[in-house]
Length: 471
Image (cartoon, rainbow, N blue to C red; front, side, top):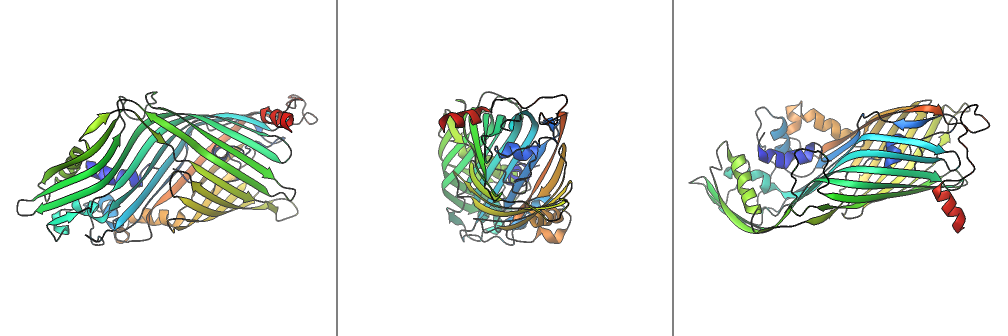
């Protein structure tokens, strides 16, 4: 696998992935309760006392790529032999392409129900996150296909790209309780262990082609951040510490409408003092740009430009934080309480980026089977249809789904069908999430129903006592 292919594609289509997930809202799964801290995951008189995923990963992966380079990336990924389809690229027209990807994977989730008075739940979780986004030009991809894509000799500012990637481990403590009959509060406090950070901002770029000698003179100016890690792979390390907090609250009205608000993963990572910041203004000559080895040649030349005029120092980055508000109400559709319909309206806003999205989530439940249908729209003008299938009893839950169902299917089809490779749609990419957990231990019962476990003590939870003292 070529280095440049990793540079352009692995971020876009593998595990990048500020995971935005709508279908899990108001499902009451263990995953939902860690993502939305005020959400309950236990049902008194039905659930057992402890919930655990038994180290089976619960994850959400999400990625998309827009613009004219879609056929070029897909042909490089899936065609045999691989090549860059540059037919849709517009050279010298200032056309740019967006990519975004996120991964949110819980390797450990454990929660316990500690008190009936206040419905107190406490838990621990370990997860790994990757967040990436970027903006790069048609010409950036065309260069890796060779100089024949460029009819002129000289071009200015056609490679002014922007790219950010960071990955980290997140170790969290979660606490949730009902402070009265209507209000629930939850908090998730996290320690972060940074894995990798990279940010590139190119402010100026110039290229002069010498097609007779199969060379190109390339110059760039901008800034490049690169974290240093003395550890291999994704092993946890305390070299890059950070912290984050999530706060959630829900209010249940007299009409049984639940209003939920969340501030998610507001935090930072301090990258160690062996990291580097380069204020580059440099040039290089790229040779043999028509040869089979041009990908490595161009990639190594660009890296040489970036790693110029640098200083070794620490820096701090923010996590991809979000503010979300949802409104939901459940309806029983039959007298035997077997069919339930739970619609949810949700709005989500990224705090440090322009990202904004709205979703309409519909859960249809028959006994222990739940089917969810989701429609969402965001500031990229993407309209998406999602679906989720779930088996959920008070003590067992399994779910699988996608919030970008149609595009996920099209992207999977492109890997099998050559005609789909050349398609330029609204975007290419997809989303997939999956989860599993079990509850074990004694059944949570009110004292009047219990013969063996008095869980209802006289004291309220921490938030309930604080609320009572104030008001």
